[in-house]
Length: 213
Image (tube, rainbow, N blue to C red; front, side, top):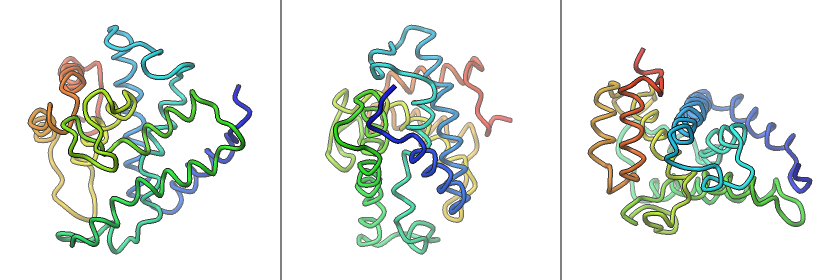
């Protein structure tokens, strides 16, 4: 048990997100459920180990990390976040700030010192989920396996749910269209190995996705 983080504060932030933004809350919940299902498959097949994910890994930590990956969007104005149309360069910069805003608010959850197993997963999810496999993501321009495994897993399911969810902006893609897009950006935006495992898991129904039904 880690004494340096107040789990009640983490749960409060999750509840706050659920209460104030229905679109973001549903996306966060779906992403968390998919991340747990995908990670379980990776572990069951031996594709990854718990140690590679985080010392002291648990499903609860993965769910929490994935659920909070976009928490910084609570601090982006709705008029920008849900704009119907192309964003200006300035507006896009505001959206990208959700990563650093999320990091700031995670910092507030930790007292003196840190619990590495919790902090590593939470910060990997929040700070690195927009990094790209090819190094052209944000905010640090990390590439390949320099990006945490947790963030790379969440990025795959985050992309899938973002494409297949009903949102105030953008066209909703079908399940098959989303899978085709994941395959297209494999090796550029997303970890190609993880995309292959995800697509195979969906095909063999080892991963069940809401948009399939």
